[in-house]
Length: 144
Image 1: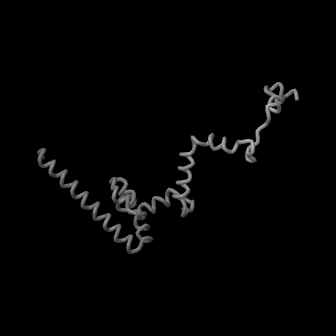
Image 2: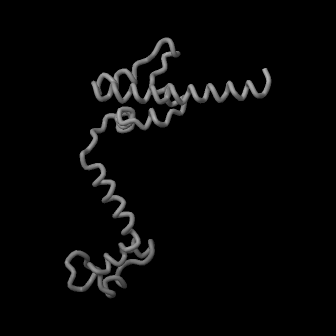
Image 3: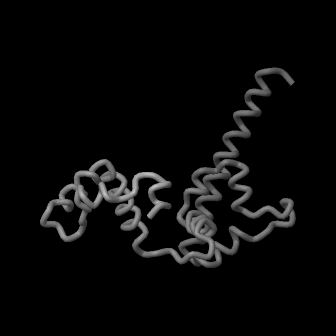
């Protein structure tokens, strides 16, 4: 086999691969619109003729990003990711609150100083006299 025919064969196989990937995504979309639960079962069914792989594992092996990006596949992967946890309706709100908390992290000392004023009832500090009477070393602590 010469180089030109080998190159043509490789291009032909890649074209067929793309065509079959598009067909698989179209079929997945059609099935998902018709019956989403059945589609999820089909995608996770072990195929004996394909070494007991599932459609999802085959898509992963072929690196079919468009197939894996489909909402049905993403729902299955979310279920696998969460495991026994229930998905909260407010996940995005929780994530947003965590991100805001992380962004405000450098400002925590400033926020604490606002609440540490003498009139604040949230934080009360010991006086200098109380601090000086407090043991400073382990030996002083044991002597008390």
